[in-house]
Image (cartoon, rainbow, N blue to C red; front, side, top):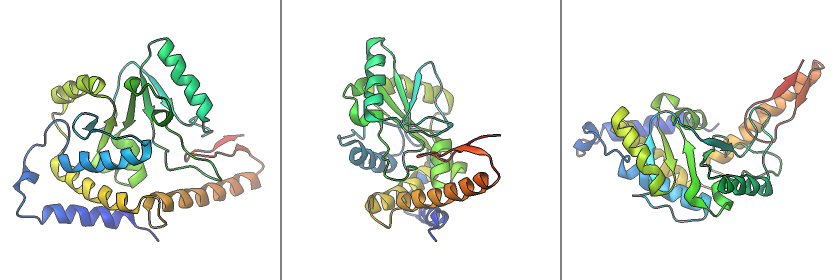
Length: 239
């Protein structure tokens, strides 16, 4: 059985036992620790098929971002019906027409089943200047089973990240350094496993699919009508 907790424990121990690195006791810059931003840039450059600037297009945060915006999920929650590429393009065109900022919530990007594929609006909508990809601490804590670390990030163009950086400086200043460094170690390991059978994301999809089918069988056996999701980890039942 895959144990992501073992990897996180080992990552934390590695950081804590490195006596040659006094930086773990110091505040990290407001953009986020360089090692974590580098790992994130590598990761999202592959996922989005575009080069992500490690210094300008990534902001490490703690917890969720709040503001006046449209949040675009690539699936409907609850219900977890995935949007098609055509639907996401249409949403992007509407937002461009009415000058609306898109904040794309990608919490379930690795929860998709049975031939479906998760598409981020930032992958296909070319007006990237109007899109922020929000991966807050609660989301990635659920994905990686470490929501106590409260680490998240935002991917987007520099001109949109600038006011978020100012807001971060005036609120929490910076995310704790040791956990950022440990998160970077774990993410670097997963970056090398990406799109292989050893990848945690691949294991997660199969594990969640097994649990989804188990719950569907139980609910169907009671006569409760359910909506079979093709992504995410929610099941809508009518009873």
